[in-house]
Amino acid sequence: MKALVTGASGFVGRHLVEHLLDHGDSVVATDRSTGLDICDAEAVRERFSDERPNVVYHLAGDSDVGGSWNHPRETFRVNAEGTLNVMAAARDIGIERVISIGSADVYGKVEPHDLPLTEQSPLRPTSPYAASKVAADFLALQATLGYGLDVIRVRPFNHIGPGQSERFVAPALAMRIARNEIEGAAVVPVGNLTPKRDLTDVRDVVRAYRLLALDGHPGEVYNVCSGVAVSIDTLAQLLVERATLPMQLEPDPDLMRPVDVPILLGDFTHLREATGWTPSIALEVTLTDLLADCRSRAEAERLRPSI
Ligand code: A2R
Image (cartoon, rainbow, N blue to C red; front, side):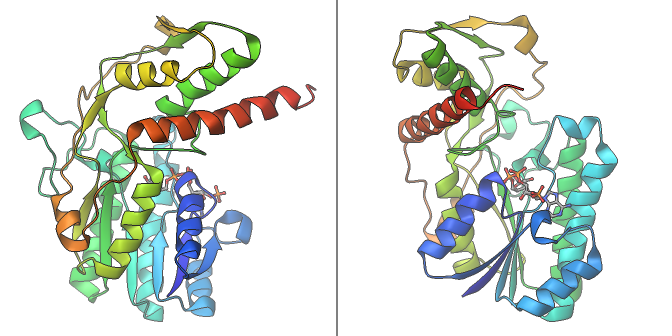
């Protein structure tokens, strides 16, 4: 199978490209460094026409949820208009299947009685990022219903693993621990520890994406999640247990954020029934691998000459 991946240089994109290559697919990896700006409709069409892949995995997006409050138009342009460009080009060129990567953030403001979230749960976006992903989700749905394009929509919940940016809580904690190990420090400052999140290893997530490309049903939407909610406290404790020096968590008012969603928990029954997928990597393994990756990053940071 020939696959074209947008957003290939991102956290998920790098894992997806590796997974596809490991499974014998031929891969065209695109991002802005390869000259493909997803907001340039003609460039997207040309690249699809030149490459003629069987499947497009559309991951390119502005994934900065917090930043979207400051630049909502840019977020909307990349996530919604970018998806529109991908759908239009796929239709023009006759791409067999598009896997459109959205986000579970579309469920937004959830109440405990809404849990676990299924694909039928209401969409109540709270951030500009989430609204842009609702728009992208509906553009993808319209491409199926209106143009008959074979599109599969995906709503991944929180995913973690090696290579993730420090904007996210697990790598932020792991980097603090890795730096402490180098400096001999013991305090790990933490923000809110009570929220619970549904976490999946990024390597399981990309496995789900490829299985959906093979066995997903056209026009349908699939949650990708673990079905288990883990508190940030548990996550932090599991990371601290893996430190090579004794460390303790210490609340830091600067890291406290208003928490609008105390618990997020998804249901992946639809995905399992279509593809047989279940998560296979234990959280402990993910965190061990994440910490190893953060140790390399902290060591590289230490060796980098200061300017
Ligand atoms: O061009 P780069 O190096 O910034 O690549 C990023 C790409 N990207 C774009 N590609 C083409 N045209 C654009 N205007 C554009 N803006 C961003 O999207 C990078 O390769 C990717 C985003 O990577 P990350 O921020 O690491 O996101 P992550 O976690 O890999 O998430 C992938 C997808 C996104 O649609 C999320 O919203 C969703 O999964 O959860």
